[in-house]
Amino acid sequence: MGTAVKKTISLPADLARDAEALARAEGKTLSAVVQDALRQARIERRLQELRGMQGYWSRKARDKGILTEQDLERYLRR
Image (cartoon, rainbow, N blue to C red):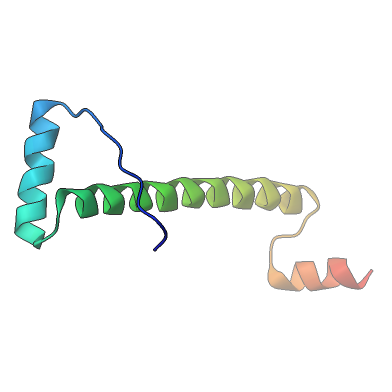
């Protein structure tokens, strides 16, 4: 891990209590819980982007009549 940067954040009281309880339950620091949550959010965002790209290219393939791997192989051999 690189150099840590300290930041001050504000959380609603209930979310702060939940985060602190999670940190205690998992034996982690509050910072580690927040880091994990941000990493997970980044992963989810990238998965959404990937699903969007998959949907786009699936529609393009379907428009060209490519519905199976065999269809794709035939299309690529042209």
